[in-house]
Amino acid sequence: MPLAPRFPDGDTAPGAAGYCAVSTLAWQEGQARAASDYVADEVPLALEYNGISHAVMLVTPTDLEDMAVGFSLTEGIVSDISDIRGIEIVATDPGLTARIAVSGECFLRLKTRRRSLAGRTGCGLCGAQSLQQVYRLPTPVNNTRLRFSPAALQRAFGALHAGQTLMHKTGATHAAAWADASGRIKLTREDVGRHNALDKLIGALARRGAPTGGGLALVTSRASYEMVLKTAAAGIGCLAAVSAPTALAVRLAQATRLTLLGFVRGQRLVVYTHAQRLDTGCAPSAPA
Image 1 (cartoon, helix red, strand yellow):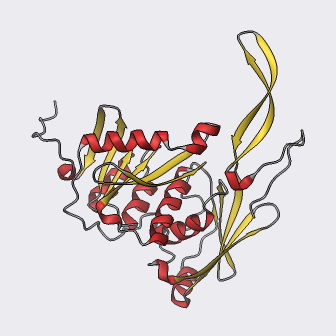
Image 2 (cartoon, one colour; image 1 turned 135 degrees about the vertical axis):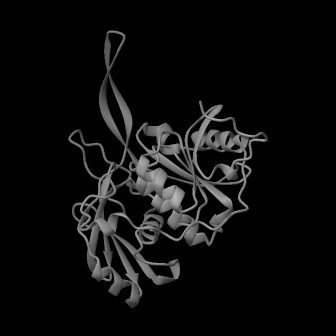
Image 3 (tube, rainbow, N blue to C red; image 1 turned 60 degrees about the vertical axis):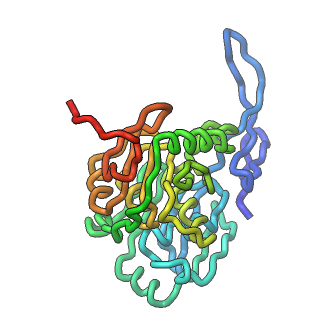
């Protein structure tokens, strides 16, 4: 069970919901009043593989089995969900532990490149021991028939915004969603960390056996190198973000044949790589 930490005023956190209630002093238009508010829950999650600690992440304590599966896949610890033999989420002091049992082959591979990873909500490379661990190149995405329109992206992001339950409650979480080529949202996951939200989404897709090749990943954040890496590793052909990508993310997306979009907001979007998947109905004009 997720922890329910106590706050100084005696409030408790219903961790399973991903948020907790706190007492506050609200000041508005020159007036102060006692009030209550909801804040996103954030707890340390240790990931253990075959009894050996590998990483500690700060996460919202929801959909943690999805998180464990997604992290294992996108970090290259396992090649397929069938390599995971079991997952147990247990409460420990002062957080949670995901005890993940993997095949002997995967565990042997993991031991050859172990790293101490102190996970943060804004950085996905903390603790990497070598450049080779950073610059992993997943198998290029193989879904050349994927096509979608700007209208589909607008529809998908509109539905994603409406479906961000934790964000509307707390104002503090990111979301990652998977949509089909018509822009229909099929699955959404939220977390205080953008990497965690994407791992949860990828894990949920893998646990359902969903074919990812014909869909799009949507994220409510910038498109960093690691976000592209995780998306490509999951075999998803498109990553669309509300904010900007980085130069390294663009280079990785180009190399893995992933369509990368940024600034997807309202009637605007920018395609950075493999624009042939975007069906605009007209030929693009030359840049000025």
